[in-house]
Structure formats: structure tokens, C-alpha cells
Image 1 (tube, rainbow, N blue to C red):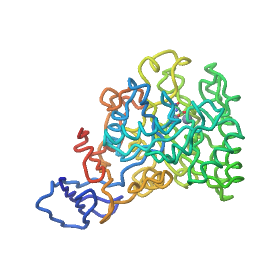
Image 2 (image 1 turned 135 degrees about the horizontal axis):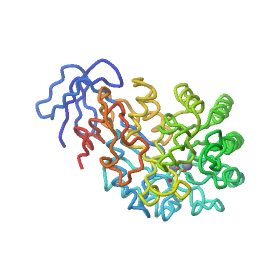
Image 3 (image 1 turned 90 degrees about the vertical axis):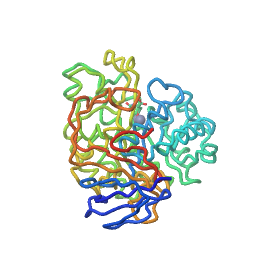
Image 4 (image 1 turned 90 degrees about the horizontal axis):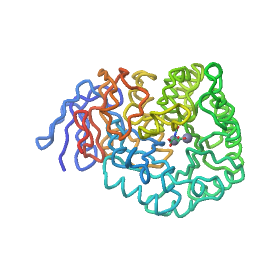
Amino acid sequence: MTAYLIKNVSVVGGEPTDLLIRDGVVAETGAGLTAPDATVLDATGLVALPGLVDLHTHLREPGREDAETVESGSRAAALGGYTAVCAMANTSPVADTAGVVEQVWRLGREAGLVDVQPIGAVTVGLAGERLAELGAMADSAARVRIFSDDGHCVADPMLMRRALEYVKAFDGIIAQHAEEPRLTEGAQMHEGEVSTRLGLTGWPAVAEEAIIARDVLLAEHVGSRLHICHVSTAGSVAVLRHAKARGVRVTAEVTPHHLLLTDERATTYDPVYKVNPPLRTASDVAALRAALAEGVIDIVATDHAPHAVEDKECEWAYARPGMLGLETALSIALDVLGPRWDLIAERMSRTPARIAGLDGHGVDPAPGVPANLTLVDPAARRVIEPAELASRSRNTPYARMTLPGRIVATFLRGEPTVLDGKAVR
Ligand SMILES: NC(=O)N[C@@H](CC(=O)O)C(=O)O
Ligand SMILES: [Zn+2]
Ligand SMILES: [Zn+2]
């Protein structure tokens, strides 16, 4: 195993120092280190962060390997600075059995570019009718702790209650896609002034907020852990603030796109901007940014949702919702939050690793810790070219935009997965 000596790197924004990586761990830190056997990387001007952790990734395997595979998604993740991703269950077949979650887990191990932690479905086939084999998935080799019907809401309150109660036994979490289905029938975009102007059916903010309000009360009632996927409205932030003040065990994520883009994008009729929950208004974006800085929203999660060309380059109404995120998330965070490295490390690595229970991830580089880390060049600016992305899909909403920051290198347990901005494999 090659040793690496990273020279003059700022660890999470601190004074430049050296990091020696050997045998999978950070062996030593400090200025002026030498190691004759190590490969030296000059990291002057670069920032080292604990490897990013994504709690919400769609890898599409099994079933839609034309849109993404565990391997291509893992490569996209590594290039984005990630060392671990949680793979959503809405595959085909659905990840609702020990067999499927073990398959995804094994494919992740084989690709070896990031740790792939499968998420299990809450209900059989995401149909919202019967609980899936939560216990068997928890006991499987994949050791599933997060369960989600993402793409669908667990709308039945009794089923939601039982799921929350069930996972308590092994400190599991239910991650809810908060969307009251009766309020979003036929919805194409955010319900508001722009949808009225365009004549498109709206997805009202209350469809999200009503489910979050219900579920924080349910989680409080049964004392279980709840996670809210892709929070998108100012009203949701208010509900979460209230719940946290009461001590409810709830965590929440926001996506990069909901931190940057608004429903005005729909006026282009370009389905690349179609996503669930939909892009909201500028005042929602402002509330989400403030909530993330404050900690009412705990983490940034990408909701990386690759889609094949035929599912995206069509009429708005027929296009599938979702957009790519892994390869641009750090740049968007840097754009939105500025170089607040400790906040970025907290929201994109330490806290998501803690929520998911991923040992060895989300830990700042220090002697003895597993060498899961990424090196960022904050001064670089890059133009996003969809054809250059490692994802098998092209549905990035940031095409041809110039974004700050570039991932220079990523290490997974001491092995580089990205060097010089390029995937090693
Ligand atoms: N976000 C999306 O618009 N789509 C996701 C599902 C989801 O996250 O709800 C997908 O799987 O494509
Ligand atoms: Zn969702
Ligand atoms: Zn999703």
C-alpha cells in the first residue's frame, strides 16, 4: 500500500500543515513531516475535509443501469469528494428484502470507490400497504439502519407509526419523502405565482409541511428517530424548528438545488429543472439557507437522481423528476455558504455520518483516524460540462454554469479514488 505525504494543506480551514497517510489511516500530522517512502502531494492552497457523506443518493442499480450503476455513481461520488453514500431503495426490483440490499452493498464493495450503504424500503414494493422485512434488512450483511420509500411518501399514518416503532429496536431511522399525495395529484411544479402564469398544476408547500407536522408528532409520540428528506419550504423550516425545540428526535436535509435554484427556472420549460419536491421561491431559498447555517436543517444531501435521456429530454409533463447532484454539491455549498469550512464539514460529512452511523466517516483528519478525506481547491473555478460528468446521465441543472471549487483528490481508507481531479479507476 502506497503511503502519501500531503504537504501544506489546510485541515478544515486551519493553518497549513502536513498529513502522512499510511496503512489506511492518518499516521502523522504536523509541519515539516518527511517520509522517504511516501508519494508527495503538494497541497499548497488546498483544504482537506473529512470525506463527504451523502445520505440521499439514487444509484439506479438494479434495474436502470442505463441511467446509473453502483460503479458509475460511486465514481461520480468520489469525484465530488464523497467517501460514503446511502443508496435509496427505489430500484427495480425495490430494495425491500435482505437479498436486494445485500446485492447493492456487494456491488458497492466491488466498485470500491466509496462506501455504499443501502437504504431499505419501508413498505413492500414502495406500495405503501405492508411493511417490508425491516428486521431482515437490518440483520443482513448490509446492516441497514435507514429505511425510506423515497419517491413516494409513507402516507398512511398507521403504517408510518408502525414503521417508526419497529426500527426503534435497532436504533433505526425512517427517512420520509414528505408529500401528501392527495394534495399533489398531477402536480408539475411549485404552486404559486409562476405556476399560475404558466398554467401548470401546482405542488403546494402545504403538501410537504402537513406530512412533516404529522410525522414529527408521531415520532414524538413513539420516541423514534425520524429524518426528513429534501426539505424545500420556509414553512417546513418553521415546523422543524418547533419540533426540535420540543426535543423531537428529528433530523432534516436540504439539497444543493433547493439552496440555489427557484421556480422561475420552470419558465424555460426545460425538464432538467423538474424535480420533487419542486424548486420553490426565493424566500423559501433564503429560509433554507438560514436554517442550514443555524442547524434547524442538519445536513446537505444531494438527492442525486440520474435519468436517461428519453426520460428527461421530452415534454415537461412527461419528464421524470430529479437532477444530478454528486459531482457539483461541494461547489454549490461553497457558492451558497462561502468558505465556512467547519460548517461545510459539519453539514456534509460529520453530521450525515453520525445520522447514518457510518463508523470511520465524518471524522476530521488527525493521527490514527481512518484516512477518509478529500482535498478541495477553493480558488479554482470550473465550467460544468454535462458530457464530462462521470455519471451515466446528463441531467445536471448547472450545465455551462461556472462554479467555485474543485475536488483535487479523494482518499478512501488511505487509497486514492481521485488524484489530480481525475478518478483513479
Ligand atoms: N427527487 C426526484 O425528483 N426524484 C427521485 C425520487 C425522490 O427523491 O423523490 C428519483 O428517484 O428520481
Ligand atoms: Zn423524495
Ligand atoms: Zn430521492
